[in-house]
Image (cartoon, rainbow, N blue to C red; front, side):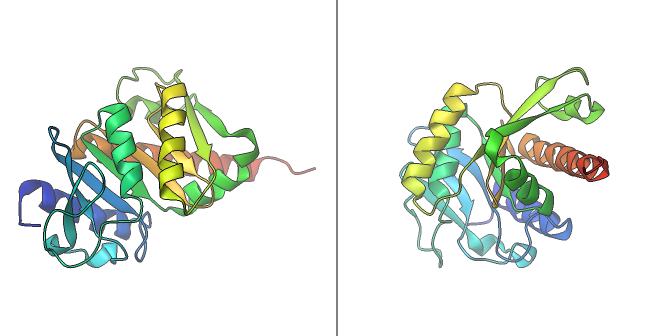
Length: 208
């Protein structure tokens, strides 16, 4: 895809998340809405190293996840999940990370279908949250290689949980979004901080 402020922002975010351990190797995928009618997204190509991502590895796709340009590479396998989130939430950007804490906690709490995060000052970094007393539900979906089914399940889950700011996929990672890349990037920072805080706190609890 041709160079643009949005593409440059995506590349810089990916490299930053790589440095912070949230998108190591080829893990993670990131997108931003280019147009609404018809829907078009700029999204990272599949199987590219996020620490060495270049503008040429950002592809443009339509509302069905099909590539629209001749840029080498193919869209991320999880493009349909990005589209599901954009369509359900009206998001302007979707970011998917693979941190250690999101992976571990998504497995630890999978039996409950998710877990609450509450009482942390950093919750106020989430859009619409103004107090540490906020109670944030973080749903967990089972992982699947059937992206059409996982995208449909994502839509169902978001329909039942209209106030969440993100969700986890078991033993896989975290998805979050925002009205634009800046807000989505902030949500990644906030949620990754909270996930690590929750994980470390649970490690300190007595084991009987």
